[in-house]
Image 1 (spheres, helix red, strand yellow):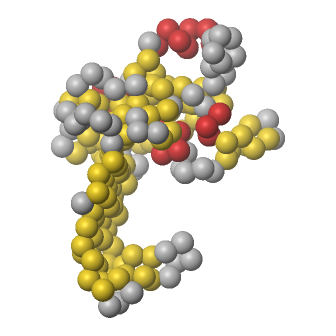
Image 2 (cartoon, helix red, strand yellow; image 1 turned 90 degrees about the horizontal axis):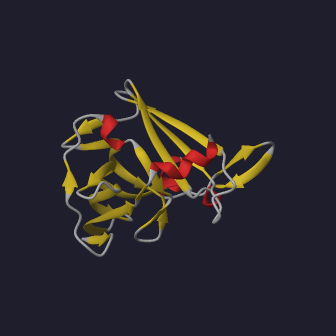
Length: 182
């Protein structure tokens, strides 16, 4: 089993309502990763004013909720807190994009009998499971957890069993940092 995450073991708070996630969080996580990469998917760029802008341009993420929706906004704030604006927006809907399971928000859950590479070729056969969750630690910081688990026959010859779990903590910031936008 391989595990990557912050230096200290993460103790989770049991989430019962999505409203508990509300807050402003740093986009840069511990260990070195970006929340925007998970929200808007790994390295793609969005168009803003007809220009492609990579996600690392974002440095603050705001999470709010409305009824059964989680709303995420990505902001850029410079070191002097002078530049500000909403640059990216995404919403997740309860029952369609996520559900609350064991005190965490479960986003993606995939089960498969095959493992495929980037070219969509089958490279292994056997049970394979992947999940992505969002939770809060005991200090109120956001934690994104992703796990992959499997026991497969790699290249149809070699038996392989294992798991990889990533936990990335994103610091909760003072919500007043966004007051400069209003």
